[in-house]
Length: 77
Image (tube, rainbow, N blue to C red):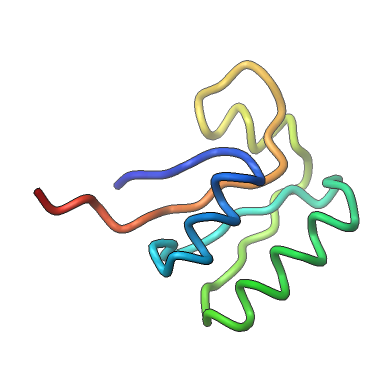
């Protein structure tokens, strides 16, 4: 399973139709949450809510918080 971390990369993957599922931290800036919810709704991408950015970052294997992350389709070579 491949994934991308961060609001810019997540937004990009949803926009390109490559995201399978998106994880969003509940304590993310409201503007970012509103934007990704709108994009995911339009693209029929499910959203899973995570309690904090710290927990999401740890889950993704990074030492800092993450606002959002997306599971993406694997690249076919």
